[in-house]
Image (cartoon, rainbow, N blue to C red; front, top):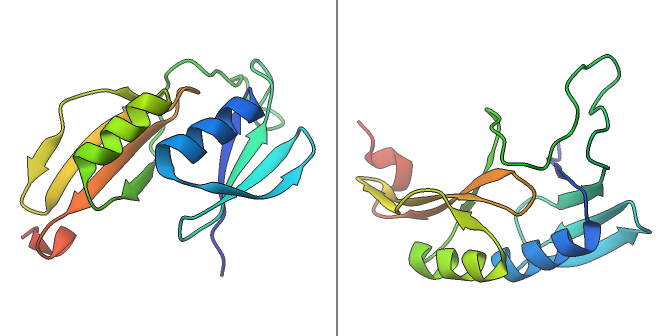
Length: 133
C-alpha cells in the first residue's frame, strides 16, 4: 500500500513556494496548472489546485474555503529542531497558533499554512510517543 497526501490549494505556485520554503519539499512532477507532486517526506504530498467555493465532492453542501478551518485529519511533520522549523515555516508564510508546547514525548508547534490547513511540527525526545504511559 502507498499513502498519498493531497492538499487542496487555491494558488498552486504559492503553495509550491510555501511547502518548499517552509518544509524543504521539492517538486517531483507537475501536471500543468492543476497539480504538483512534492517530494522530500516519507509520502508524496500532492498540491491540487481547486478553486475556492467549489464542492469537494458530489452531493456535499459544504464548499471549499481557504480561510482557517479545522478537520479531524491533519499532518504532523517530524523535525529535528522544532524551534528552527517554526522560524522557517513562519518566514514562508505559516502562522503559529500557540506557543510551542513541551510534553514527555517531545515538543509540538501547532501551525496553519497560508491556505487554512492546520499542521503540526513535532520534535520527538527520548522514546517519542512511547514515553506516554
